[in-house]
Image (cartoon, rainbow, N blue to C red; front, side, top):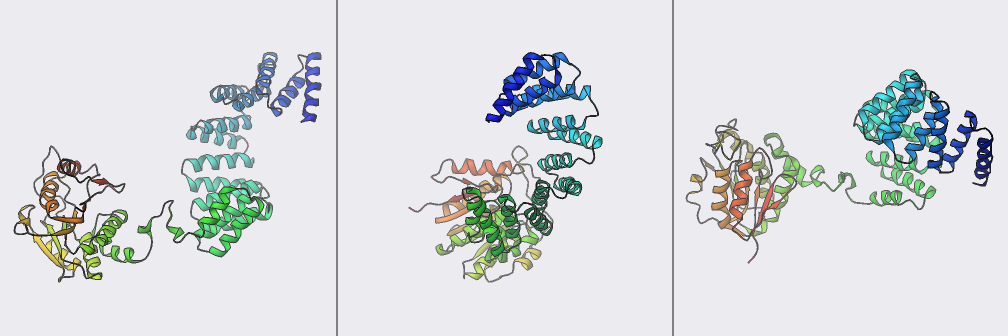
Length: 451
């Protein structure tokens, strides 16, 4: 700092002696920026521009001052002026790209970087900047290509190697990412980010011991870095590969994945919604009441529920559907039409679901098919009928017969394709003590409280 202050004093004195000397102006502006005095540096650059309006160096210095002060729009105007003066100056185009990227104008930034590369194709920093810009647009494959070009031009640059490694990891090329991380570490063995990145790469490959060693090395280099310590702690979490970023057990193995295989080939219900059914169906087993599904379609979720009941000696499963498509709908409330989902049949569903001892079929229109079941005690009901009147009929019949501690799950509640389903649920439960729990999956669940 003392050296900079001394140089500043000399530069100020030189500027007083030679106020029209461009070289002196440039030196003074540069030293002021190094000292963090951006306002004074701006004033010097503006005097410099007055002396030499067509001098690109003065405009470039002004751009830097304005950018450091966060005045991005003014900085962009200044660099555009520099480009007008020197249109073949690649560095100005790259500078424009940096500023546009800070403004989140990624497409325009990309264009500026490509202009810079066209004028100076062997400048690795331009390719690296373009890679960063492309990755922010989610274009990882193109970003990898740009980062590889930067490495080709300057293979001994650690930062280019590390950028390439991170992009390969982001794109899922774990083998390529590992090689790039190791090459980056060979260039700069005491940079913790490379070791931490290698740890992430090894973790995704299931190589736990090597991952721990890599992250521990990062912590040795940077013991106060909380991110690396948290990364190491995460390696000890059970089923950590299911954190994406939150714990997502429906992506794992075990019983759910086994029973889900019964649903997957014949259901429109995705794994996250099936997991809700799985968890609540198991939760209700202790009640001993019947399980109902209204809206069976091809029998996917019915087969899954039947499999759960079979494994735990569960109660009867009743399945309600026309097995021939939608009934008439209310066009003022519903988007579906009569005949939708007609590509199914009772025989096909029966063959897929199996478990004949547990399952009974009620073919026809709801609520007609509820006739004779007024004395039922229901522990769990999955309602997937899509349209207002059918959902309301299910609520009116099932909820009074739902056992204390039992569940109703409405598959279509939150889907914009089924506005009538939500209207029916909200309307019915508005006058009761139950309150639908709206889930991020699009479902809603109702729990009948005890007592």
